Length: 109
Length: 109
DNA sequence: TAGACATATCTAAAAATATAGATATGTTTT
DNA sequence: AAAACATATCTATATTTTTAGATATGTCTA
Image (cartoon, rainbow over all chains, first blue to last red):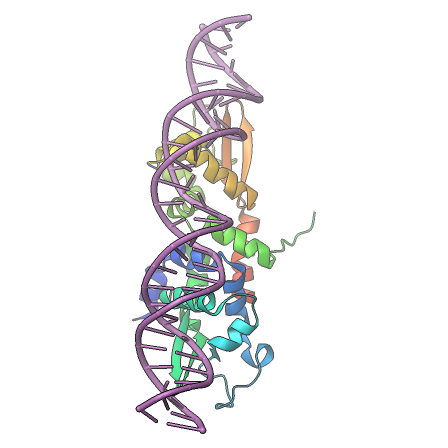
C-alpha cells in the first residue's frame, strides 16, 4: 500500500475512536519511547518490535482482556503492528500510519 | 489572552470523541468553506460568524435536536464558536483550537 | 507430553453515546 | 400581545462501547 493511499483513504472516524480513550492514547505515547517507559525484556535486548502486552498492562489498572481488546482495536485501525516472539506478542507503533493520519487532519480537517 | 492555545491529554480525548462521528467531522469540513457548501444567508452577506444551524441541518439527514446536540458538544470541546444574530445562531470553526489539536498530535502522539 | 505461561477470544453485564420527539427559550413579526 | 420562527434543552429509548471473567489458543519448559 502506498503512502498516497494512506493519506487519501485515511479513516478519521475510526482512528478518532481509538484516540477517544485516555489509556489508548497513553499506550501510543508510551510506545514512542519504550526504553524510557518499560523495563527491558528478558529474551531481547532491544525494542525494535515494540513492547509485550504484559508490560503494557502493568502500566495500567486494567485487566488483561481489556488491554488485549484495546491493542486489537488499535491494530484494526493500523496504528500498531504486532510481532510474535515465542510466548509473547510485541506491539510497536505504525509510524507511517500515525504520520499519515496527522498529515491528513492537517490538510482536510 | 495568550497567543498560545494549550491542548492537554484530556482535551485530546474530548476532541477525538467529537471526531468519532462522520457527520461531526463533515460539519467541521463544511464550515471550512462556507461559501462553497452553503447558500447565502438572508440578513447577512458574509460568513464571518459561520453558518446558521438550519443550513447545517439541511446538509444532513438528522433531526434538528440531534444537530443542535452535535453543535453543543463541538462547542464544549472548543472546536466551534457560536454567535447569535437575531433569531439565528451562527457557528464557525475555532481555527486556533483546531490547529492546536493537530499540532499537539503531531508533537506528542 | 503435561503443566505453565502469555495472549486472544468469547460472553455478558454495565456504562456511555446517539437519536428524535416534545417542550422550553429567546427573538422577530404582525 | 399573539403568532411564527430558530434554536436549545429535556426525556426516553435504541445502539454502541467498555470492561472483565471465563475459556481457548499457541508456545515454551520440566
